[in-house]
Image (cartoon, rainbow, N blue to C red; front, side, top):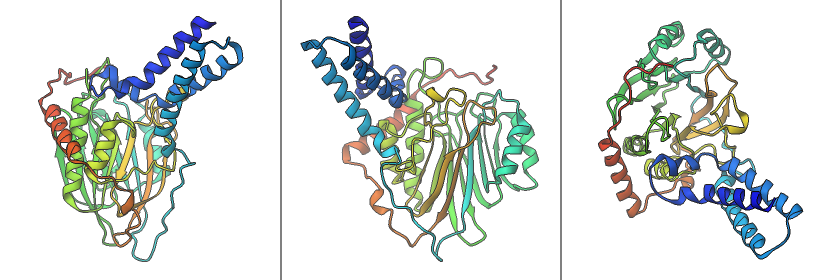
Length: 360
């Protein structure tokens, strides 16, 4: 029993502290994702040890370290719980009408086209973003065009295809390849019927993992390149997509500070979306950030549509007069700005051997 306690405690302490090593290799970054699961296991081990183990000096030292790790995990996760109170903003006569977005990593090898189209018909969003959508998905999504006449389509077979469809007028659409010529991002400008203009970024950078990218350089470089674009445009802006990252990771914090955006998960919950089939191993990697003149009414994960990701739903309005969210923005320090520039350049310089056509 004691051997199991000390072995498991050592592993859980390691899992808590290893992300503090600021190395972009997947081995260090992969532990950013499972903070909730790590915290739960630490709590179980802590309580079980109190109940069943002999109280020795080693026991107390180990328990104290576990307690410190749990406090650290709670510190990171607490803002992403409903216990962290935020004030909900109300519409005024200066606000736009509500806008609904659904963003979905559809999973390239998911063939349940009709299921997804039926889901969209029922939810009736104003804007739809799909990721991992290849040419087969592009063919299936043509059925949307009678009701969604504005669109931007990038049908790729490498699991990084992306498609955007809208009922709202799309004034402009640009396809960016910030760090690699096979990893697109979409930047679109929309104008609502009530005269509000806003910018939309759809993103899907590659993840650091033993089966995909060896490190997080392309992911971080891509996201921080988008962040700089957001900061430069000075208009209401939303960034949404499969970030392959979690909100408390250092690169996500740098994204938020660089772009001057707000994380709407704060005070609402984790809103975990991946993996759709395994509730206990589900991580909040589909994310959204927005500027201070966008106010989120609702943000939630939706039921499965056959993908390994759950769709992310957002309902928001625009209010350029209301400055109540200004104090929620964090800003970069001088050292942070230098690090952001370095990470972008490293992302551009990174070479990957991704396949042009990925098969299941």
